[in-house]
Image (cartoon, rainbow, N blue to C red):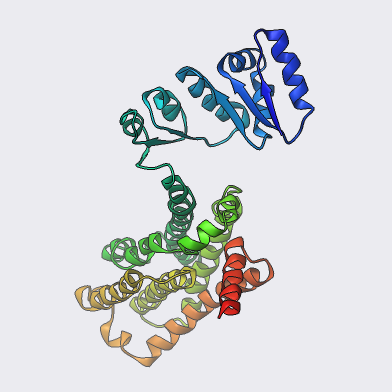
Length: 358
């Protein structure tokens, strides 16, 4: 059903608006003059009711009215707004929105020049939102969580080390080790996560609910932040505590064991998080290992090379790494089996459909 709201004064606008409220599920069509009466006299109520409509069509609107609607949606509905326009009269609306999308058309390029994204055809909005927009959000969420994890886990190791040694002001890692950890040892695998995809483009277009699921903000929220904080505390504590339990006479050996376990833990965490492998991701992992092994010889003051290439060193490192990674990974697997995310359910449906078609 469609409800057309046309009014010439405040009383008539209120009367028709009250009638429209009694027709839930109806689409609203309103002209510029009636829109001004509604936004001037009862803007909050109008926006709240309009947001519950399947669709709202505002026709014959001035450029200032288009921008006003966007600002009211952001103010009262607390929505993130995307505005799409193809002419100069859409510039104000595009600039008022959180995301402005401009189309290059017969009306010139004013809208596209003022927008955040410029498209040639309106049909490209589908790919921009459902594919590139979704990937941008998921990749940003995962990358930010890994950056937090990477910085927090080494801080936990330092905190546990200081606590065990009577809070002595001694840094367990210093100099080039800290620089290398933040750059060549872990940077490439972590940042290669921006290439990850949990579903392919065809599936994203076929199941728009995948995008709708992201609007709930569950990929990057307080719960996910605390989850990664817990992972960092657990893994950092395990690496340092187990290294002390396997204490060796040389302090240099403890540094080698804990730092190697730390690097391997970080690399393995990236491996366990990847949904779809890209050759650059594999190359990033290999290069990081090569850089770290090379540091044994380039930084002899930090590593005892003779001790590193012994079975005694590697069984300790492997044991610590497995204990720090396996419980976290098993917990994630169990959670995914009991309560799988939407993209996992969709992936299973796609695989079942493919198997049936074969």
